[in-house]
Every structure is written in C-alpha cells, then in structure tokens.
Image (cartoon, rainbow, N blue to C red; front, side, top):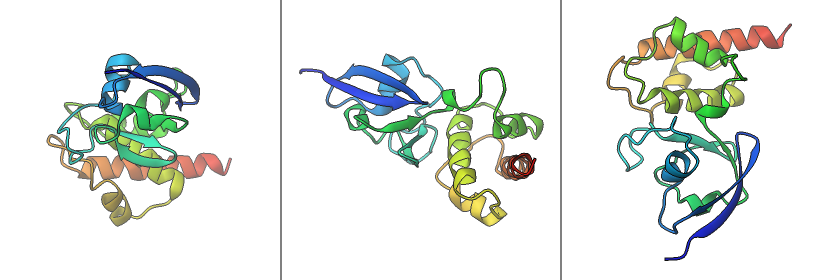
Length: 161
C-alpha cells in the first residue's frame, strides 16, 4: 500500500506528512506528528475525546482520514496556549477544577474554543448543546459549564480593553 503525501496547516504552521490511505487523522496527529493531546476514547465518533477543528468546524479526528487534511486548516489542543500563556479556557478549567483524568479535556477545550469564537456570550443551554458530543466520565458537567462561562466572560472583558 503506497503512502499519501499530505500538505496541510496545523495550528498555523505549514505541515507535511506521509500517511497510509486508511490512516485516521487522529493516528496521524498522535503517531506521526507526535501531537498527543487529542485522545482516542471510542474510535467511533461518539465521545469527542479526539475533537480538533478543521476549517473552522469541530470534528472527531477518529472519523476523518489523514489524507482528507490535504490543504485544510487544522487546530488542535497543542495550538491553544500562546507559548507559556494559557488560553482563558485552559486557565478557567484549572481554576474551576473542571477536569480530572484528562482524557476528555483536550476535546472539550477545543470544542469550547470553537463555540466562543462563534458566540462570545453563549447561554448555559447553548454551551451544553455545543458540548453534547463531548463525554466526560469523571467530573460531570457543571464545573465544565462554569469554566466555559467564566472564560467567555474573561474573553469578553479583555476584548473591551
């Protein structure tokens, strides 16, 4: 089986890799590019642990082939912080104790960031709806929702300065 050459953009950086035709984007990210933030929770697109953003839309990277990333814009959890400076969502997840085992956290953070870019002032219902595809088995969702609300408020305040 011959490998496919892919040129894409990941977290703002031009990236090239070779992948097998049947290799998932999740496997490419983790095994070839050593971006291990996205996790494989189910392998069927049901849990959201592998969520990344492709061309502005959250996707389950376990359901997308690595070859499909050709000429696409991919955002992963690795691109969320600015160097050592955490994104407000990451900081609020820590401050609100919105994580435990960490398997679901990268996918939830990536999905929440996509939500806040689309709607900087979501209601609790909108947050719950947007994150419905991301399952957490440890914390429940109240702390996660509070962390997203706190980050949204922080980001709105920062944009008015």
